[in-house]
Image (cartoon, rainbow, N blue to C red):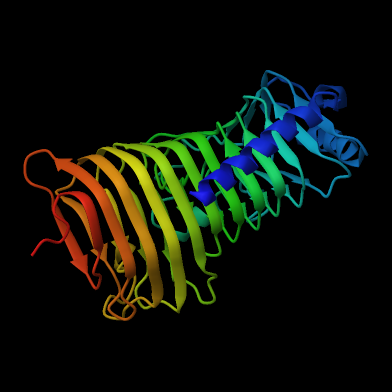
Length: 394
């Protein structure tokens, strides 16, 4: 409960501070720097020129992209800046179809090393990925070469609100090395057939708050990677997509612990999976603990509750060797709705380091056509309240 109030307080403070700071801020309009809303002239140079001046301003400032449609090439927006700074996107920014000239791993639009930054304005970042899904990004390594729509790296005390990321060629958002970053009233929009398009991926970050956010995509709505600590997710809708995932963990050596995940209030609709914690077999040692999922509505969701320590996509792993990621102190509470798979609860833990203190309270899941089933392996769950279906009943 304390974590929830702390996260909400942080989000509220940042929101109010943002509104107060920028009410009288100097405005740097990209159209004054040569930006054209003609859908074909690359906005990147005008945007970076406006950003450079705003970033050097000793008082709070805003960079404005007015309403209209703009072409935008690969753009890296960097700090540190001298004062709080806001990028107001009111228009629609369109990525190039051909990104072969992009700098590798930089994404389409990247924000780096900025403190007290706000991205706002009801605008749209359109990655124009529809021509590539399933053609250049299936099960091949080339998926990783396609640009992520928005990269947030090493931001502190910042906020993203009232903007949309649409049809990314790969992940929509990647959060890396950030501290105290809020997503509020954020939208991810892509169809179910968009491959490898995680909505928000978080790694090696702390104090990330996702609230009042709506995600439709072709992969995980939210995925939480190693080194993520004190992540709060509240009032989120997900679907279509693959659900909300911690992991996959344990694929690489020296992964940092995942600690302090709180999800409270979510609705998943027509997703491939529900709430999922997944680790690779034959993994190095790792830790995932203090993870709590509460008040989740499942509408026709496959595998609503999953712990899977035998995660092995495309059979590219050694299932006979157990995962060495230790999962402990996990709770699922007040999870209700309908499952599209007969197996509604799957708790498959490692026989090398079995799960500890896994709690399920007030689980009420239905399956159309037959009684839902459950599966438990290398775990002794602590049960309370309603249990429909009966969790791993003898």
